[in-house]
Length: 203
Image (cartoon, rainbow, N blue to C red; front, side, top):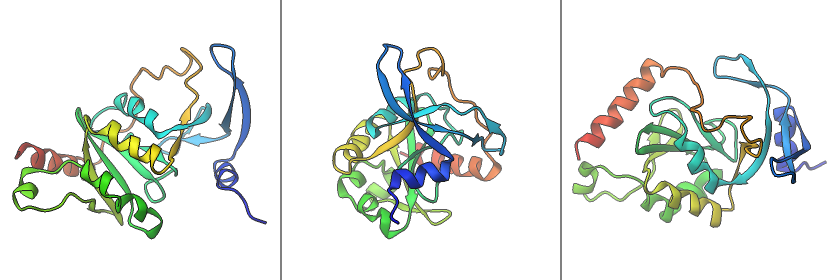
């Protein structure tokens, strides 16, 4: 028996489809994930989720803290199966995706690559903009905050991408205007962030 991608996701996330009321009284569909854990494996309270256009991700990313691993995933749930965004500094984001044929339509998309940030060293050498190897087995690129809406717009319009977001219609309940707490970066992550900072400052 063939299962839809939605059913596979629901099964893996231990969730179910639900109906919920929004702040203005409308009825929306969403996914109630029954169990979630934070990055330390501790169970956290599950909230209703809803699928939104990837364009909406820009607002959510602006609420994350630079230099912390507050990843937001598109069409997946982890670095090894999704396009992932993380804020590396106030005005810069890193996007990663698996280096697999399934993601080739995205890392091979010239429109997306043209929006990647390129430091002066690569520009002076005349290198084309492109996603580069990033451990482990990923491809990555930096995106300036000014180019993020256009990047997400291509994913939304050209590739019809969505992402699973908290149901923000619960006004005042989820407090999405507050930065989402997360762990301190590891030593390796701090070194990678420092390296990115040095490369950017050499402009």
